[in-house]
Image 1 (spheres, rainbow, N blue to C red):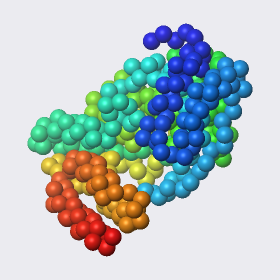
Image 2 (image 1 turned 120 degrees about the horizontal axis):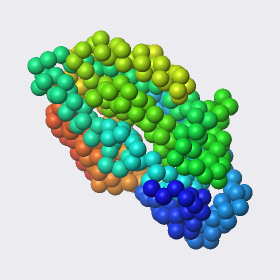
Image 3 (image 1 turned 135 degrees about the horizontal axis):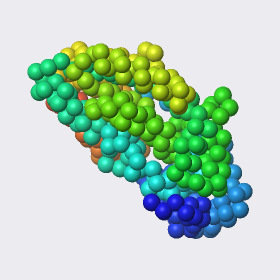
Image 4 (image 1 turned 30 degrees about the vertical axis):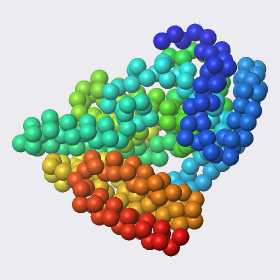
Length: 349
């Protein structure tokens, strides 16, 4: 990938226009997006000038608490700043994407939760020799990952492949727009740049696990990762080595309560499912989240804010996810209950 003139390519009108189109996808009815779109060409020209002269300053982040089911602080950038984020990722993506491992599944084209779950199924069959041998899973995630990403380490990782001082200046501007409470640490949940930087940062771990530890059956989704093996002792060694690598190289900590080595026969929680040798079940908290969302949509439908089709469309989206597990009876029950509720609403209108 060509890495010269990165800064000029970033603030070019063609890149900003592409960034604008990407940022507004599925958000065209948002009031801020509508306002921006009224004079989008002029606004992009002004943004181009600010970036070229390095006088660009992002607006303060808007924050809100999301409980789904655990409590998280979500930070939302102004739409104008989101255009800049997309413009930056447009430039960095072709440089870093080829270096990511196959089994990193978050925020990447063609990846996601469903392919990660299917990959887990393939791995468990290989390790267990079609369920004839023991299979153990090292299941863990990183303590307060987004809050503890070290800015200097991230910038050094990026600088190795993108040697451009102006580009680094912009990344610093974006990182410093968020206050984690600890200077030089943290990224906001909700920014497109944060999702991309998260993969760049933990690609260091991916490379270590795959090429130093030579762990064949490793899957990562953001900071949630698993390694499958036929012996518990090997996974114990991996666990110690991974902890040391994260602390020494990335200044991260394994979550003490979420790092376990589990026999697959007891069920392993991963990406919303509890996975067993022969079946998968939706975790109860994910089921509660889905039902709460449907109830919320039903209230919107009662108030004529959305149509019955919108409610069913949301249900079908969740069904696509739930179908990865043994959920036929569950899905049938939910569908029947939802149709009854929609009928009642229709009769009362």
